[in-house]
Image (cartoon, rainbow, N blue to C red; front, top):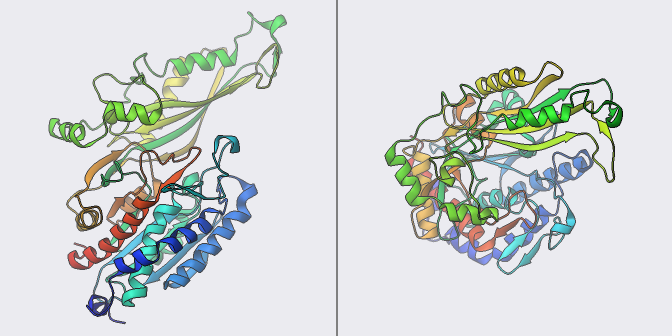
Length: 468
């Protein structure tokens, strides 16, 4: 069917279809969330494959064509498309169906994989990250196809099962199946907005570098009564190394670390102060009243446009209950480094290795293992897809979105932007209190329905604006 038929005034608009089928959309989303598709846990590999199969069936049910489950060396990639809008741009919709581990079940008000509606929220692991946000686009596609029989533009869906473990095999998949992602623009919805009445377009993400630092000493654990005071303790050495990475105010002490950090001008900082969350907002989200970090910057700036180094774990010595009198043979720390604009992960990796090798005493051996890295990403505001997204948010939320910077890292955005050269727009629908990665993760259903409406308008706006 020709794409022009979607504009016929004799057919109901897709927004009307959305309004009629809200309860069913939530019911189907609950089915989707019920799969414990935890990509990092081999015990859930079958659940993850089952989730991919459910998703592929759903793509076919809403009217997409060429739906296929592609095997990778890890978890499957699910693809589908609708490519009948001759002469119109093609948009790639990216999402991920894998989720974080649920953590302790006792911290959840209801079981994490038994999605539950309480009030105007849907609770469950993956409700906001990213199954619910992905679903906004799938339901928008369904709303168009069930009312008009056509989409106003061409659409491809690329839905992966490894985002929560760094999109490990996605680059290799796309190198082999490049046609699956050829598009004029891409949409990623895996981030937050300011609030239910405050839509936001994400314009930058920090990069990331994950390191494991290990200090080794004696060949085996030693009796602390026999050797304590005569043998240097690797765990204490590691603590000294970690303590030396930053000063007391949070500025990173590694020489050369800040050399390539892009400095924001006064205008950009003033805009961030006017449109972004306040220090009080960020502290409230964190559940604390104490602020800490690099002097001279707001909490919003520290968490989005400035680099950060966080010690996420230290392991060594006795880990159980009771007393164990030992000098441990080795100890390790996990470091999460977030990178600001213009910082190169390989360069920072080299600087970190050089620094820790220099400060460790000769009595111990230090090794560094790189677990993950991704560069920072920024998207220009002037591109057509971003302007179409602005118009779509305005139509669905009743107000224009602000631009938001995010301190997290989404590796696929770099892959789409830098490797595949696809202009990308980051349209979020999670709220600040959605508890992403935490207990009682939830999706605000009124915002979810607005998200479906935003996606409906986005497809329409892309048809009008093209992809230039």
